[in-house]
Image 1 (cartoon, helix red, strand yellow):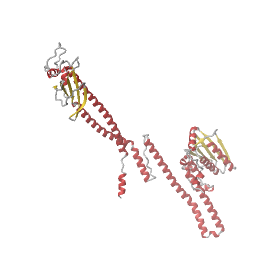
Image 2 (cartoon, one colour):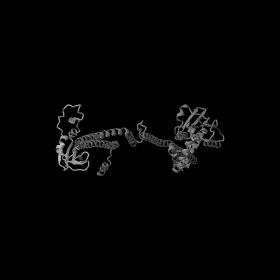
Image 3 (cartoon, rainbow, N blue to C red):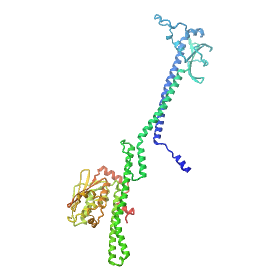
Image 4 (cartoon, rainbow, N blue to C red):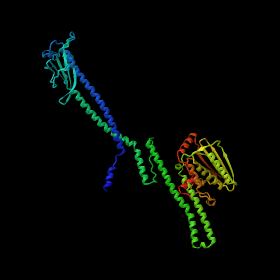
Length: 526
């Protein structure tokens, strides 16, 4: 019991819709994450370059303002320049275009007013002589301008250092150090990162929901297919089929294929049931006759030579009829499966019709046979040669049987460009209009008494019909009671391209055997 539970637990599965939804969601999420990551990286890189440029501009402004000193820098030299005391609200005097006291136009004031920047100036010995605000970054003397990222209290900051040269002599008179705390950058970085994470989560949810809905829509035929297969497995004769889909995709093709397979399986089941029913029905009478004669002989008939001879002859006749019946039943069963066993066949219908016609002229010299052959060249159809010959023999033999008064049979062979037609006309008793629809039914005989006398079992026309329709052909009949009947078969004429293609396919397959040999190989005939 535990093993069954463990097996059930191991076989627990995930729906294909969820797999599709999670798979597409994960794939799109990864792509979405990469794209947003690249955008975020590009955006933060732009922000970082702006901060770097702001730090560089601050260094340039300070060095340009302090490089006019001819001596080493002191606080007295730096304070008036970097921390002016004039009233910033004095009106602007147009006569003084170089007015420096307007703080709104002063680059120094704008630089020092930036909360993120800490500007410090050092003399040549490294002592601090000016600081716009407290700079926790230690001073380092440098021989040339230097700008780098540095870690400070767990944060990354931009630190720029540069020597201040005396204008003209290029002598170092002091140093400037600018530390950019990058507070605005980090605030934007964190805010943008938070927004992107929220967008990713919303995107993942939206993509998963959309993927599930899309999977449910596209995979809906799979549910229909599964339900149809389940019903077919529970009841092989179920008429349930996959609903028709207009999507015109692989799943619709699979649905159509499954429906065709179920229809074919249903036909085989019906054929099997009909075969069993027909055999049991048709064999019941000869078996009962033989059994009656044997019981008669067993009781007292064996002592009477006349009764003994009559019983033996009757039993042999019924045995012969049973053998003929079984042969025709097997032929009919095989005829209903020609689309499986005899594909890709090519036959010259003109040659076969002429051969069968000549054979009947030879074996029935008391009959008048005429042939109207309108085909001027070999005409090929997709049908196994033995099957075509068998159909023609059935039609010709049927015409001979029912033309005992006027012994004349007329055969015509023609084509309309797409199909080849073979017509067999007799001048016998004909078929009544109410019997026209049943003439191709199994075991049906217009006149059962006369047909039984002629050795017919009512299966010949049914076999012919199944064989022709198995090759996508058509069989029809026209008849006038008392004047005879015309049976016509129509088969598709192969184009040269179709014929060559079928011949190539046939060359790669095992050659088909004649029907009798096939039945013998299957131990169905002696």
